[in-house]
Structure formats: structure tokens, C-alpha cells
Image 1: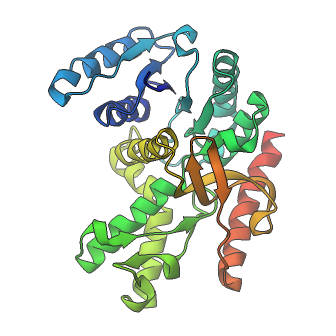
Image 2 (image 1 turned 120 degrees about the horizontal axis):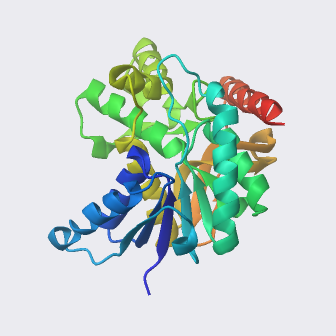
Image 3 (image 1 turned 30 degrees about the horizontal axis):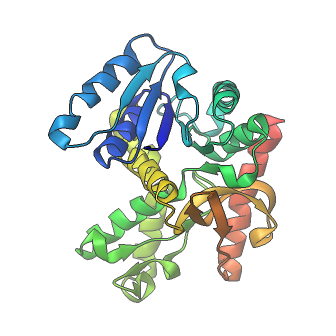
Length: 307
């Protein structure tokens, strides 16, 4: 019997996530959205592509949660997108209500599911889902670092003129302007980029990575990124459903790791069938630790606003 993944929100991120998952034949998919006809139409369109893709997954669209019952993973992408000039903090109250309501609905029908939260501001929305679900931290995870690391890798590969397959990047911290890219842990064919670029170049790439989402918003003007975010979600789903015990940078609820407690922060996570299976604590320099704590404090400020 195939696994089942529900995606709440049939906008660009949600629908494109369904596309990646279906093409990889990872699970049967239920696409949920409040707008009548949108999840049904996108699900049917995607389903009709499966004979060409040679994938036998089922893809269903719905406006309620009945068909989501017994999902193994629920991905929550629903919410208002960030617009030009809007900070992630501006989204807090509007999206907290949406994520909270969606979480309550899905956990009633899938009490054993793993939640992957994508809605921004990401770290705060993870806390909303944790509180509403009552789930242990192993089953509430945020998609942040996989995307941020991919952006960093993109810029590194372009700067050095090498294949992205040779680049492995490492980003910690909150998802937003306070993220913490770690150049000394970011490598090209195993060689740290600190041996391949000067400090000014690295600083430029780090700054671009931190503002990566805003850069795309500025281009699109009426929307935000969705290809890379949705592929990052698929990477997490793949690691969980295939029980890979794969190390990926995700937002996890820390209980003392890295000296941080009771907060969702991006850290290296081991993902497998149980969801979060462990957190890898790497030794940070004093400067890196200060940056991570600054990032965590930015998240804590959001928590204060959340109440």
C-alpha cells in the first residue's frame, strides 16, 4: 500500500510540490484548498500527466479535509504570500490563523501524521502547528534550511563555474534575513569555499542567500518563489517516506541543542520514518555562535508577538 501525503494549499508552492512528489512516485496525494475547483482542477491536470510520466500515484483535489484521513505526512503551505516591501514578520498574525485552523483539521483525521510546515514566517508557523497539534517535536518540522542551502549552493556554483553536484552548503538559523550561512562547512568537491574564495566574495554570496526570497519577490512583483521551495519539500518527504536517516537542514524545536531552548530554529536534522530522528550539533566558532543566537532572538521576538 502506497504512502499518503496531504498538501494544504493548492497555490504555486502546494501544486508544484504535488508535481515533484507525483513525478517521483513517492505517495498518493491529496491537494486541499478553500477555493472551489482549484485543487480539483490542478489535481486532475497533474493526474493526466502521470501516464506520460509512468507514475501510478493517485492525485485528488478537495475543498474539505475528509479525503485527507490517514495521511502519513501533511504539508501545510496555505497562507498569504509575501508581497514587495512586506517583511516576514508582517505575515505573522494573518497566517497564524490559517495554519492553526488547518492543523486542527488535519490532526483530527491523521493523528499519527508528520507535519511539514512551509507557510511564512516559517519558524513562528511551526510553533503554531506544534501548539495546535499537541504533537511531539519529532512530528513537527519546518522547511527552511534545505531551500536556503540550495540557494547558497546555486550562487557558489555560479561564482566558481562548477557543477552544482560538487557543491554542498550549510545554513543554520531562522528562515529569513537572520539566517546563518556557514562558509567553512560549505564545500566544493570536499574543499571548503573559504579555501576557494576571498572573504569579500563569500560575504557577497552570503548576503544574497539571506535575501534570496526577497530577490525573487522583487522580480515577480505579485508572487514569491515556488520551484525551489517545493523541491525542498519533496526532498524532506523523500527522506521521511524512504526512512533514509538523511541529514538535512530543517527547522526543529530545540530543547537545549546549540544552547537554545523552546524555539524552532534551523539546524542539521536527521530525517527518517519517525520524522525528526536526531539533531547534529556541530561545534561553532564564537562568531558563528553569536550569529545563530542573533537569529534565534529574531525568532523569539516573533514568538512574543504570537503570544
